[in-house]
Length: 290
View 1: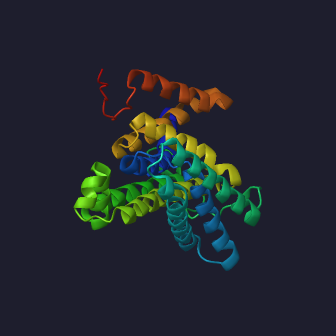
View 2: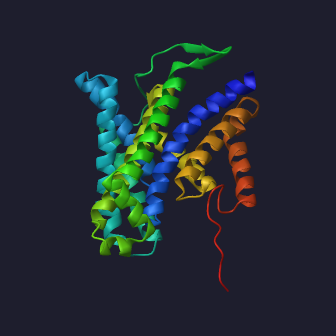
């Protein structure tokens, strides 16, 4: 029963990692680039939600929607300022420029809210729900429900909307997309916006679980979301989902006995997975021609 409890906890935090990983993968799948400002964007969106709630007495759920909007805007700014001008450069260049934009975002947040830990009001309420002898925190239930709804909505967006179709076409062949009349620059902006929205939703769920926001919250989520994307096969959205859940379950199940070594053990197990499957769990095998 205790093990099952830990698995549920793992699925909860794993769903957060999955959202962040899919935000990574949607950008990588379309452009072959990694947005290293992703963690700072989700952190800033969470702080914006906190600020709107505390400064204007806006209900926390509505404040979270504002935070998601801020994340979309910030991700779009990162694309316009740090990615588009160097899109045709070596892939390391946009990685470095997004890393620099992340530092700028972090410094702006620090100037506004400081570097301390601030209380984040839970939008799930306190207490537990008992299911089959298991006590599940309300925050965990809300996290799982919101994550599932978000992922289903994102899948429907990609499959049934014109912007989603444009994103899929650009991901397959950018040149062909231009010939088909797809607005590539507009679509790339949308790709970053969608990635930013998914990241901020993950960040808000993380803040809701811990009931705090802090300046450094973006980095550990960034690291684990990136790891989840790689394990699943970066660029593969289904793989990112599975990678996030696997990482969350590993982290939760080894945590009680491993203490401070929890993250190290979880990442060691992920390394083992990559040694067996270098392309990730669902990544395509790449054959090198000699």
